[in-house]
Length: 250
Image (cartoon, rainbow, N blue to C red; front, side):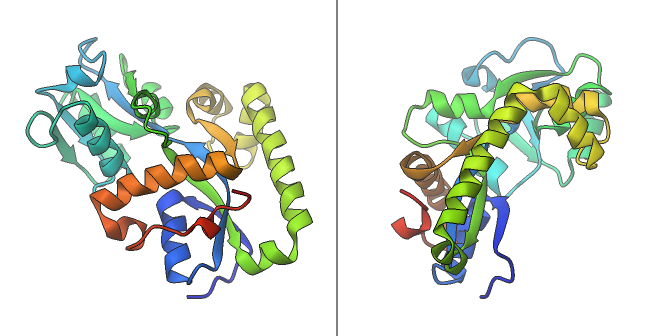
């Protein structure tokens, strides 16, 4: 497998698959996004913690990928068995979940930002009941729910170490600016067509968990998370966990 690009922003598990299938030709430079998954509630204030999901049905997308594995892990680590204590019904599209909530056919759904914020503008009473990233952190297992990462070709990184380090400094500064200037950042998001409405982008940004995690912290948090995915389904990370050389600067 050959890469025709120098660097990309991809899902964490896609980065692991690229590493495995390319024979280690891909390096992870930084974690850029923590989890953006939220359990939203249209049925009232009954969901207050993971334990309160017992006996309930959650509608979700992402079967066979990160949403399923992350939700199942958080549930089981809190003593709940998916399919027994908690029913999870999977659908193919976020819009379908929004329709079910809007029509009163579902009370709970697992949705990502910024789709949650978009849905809240259309569905009265929809609230973010649980933040899956926060629930993951409560487990205090040394890993982190990192879902978006920056990767680059190893040969490019090794040939341009100074440029890579400068990029990471600029990237960290950019992340800091976005998180400190949501209104201005939202205008740029709308300008570039990422989200059409700047007010929606501004409201969603604080819940999008945009970060810049590098070095040993990146390795600790992501390697533990990839282990959770591998335990759930080895093929989700390419059949084997990446080696230590996958983590730049660690």
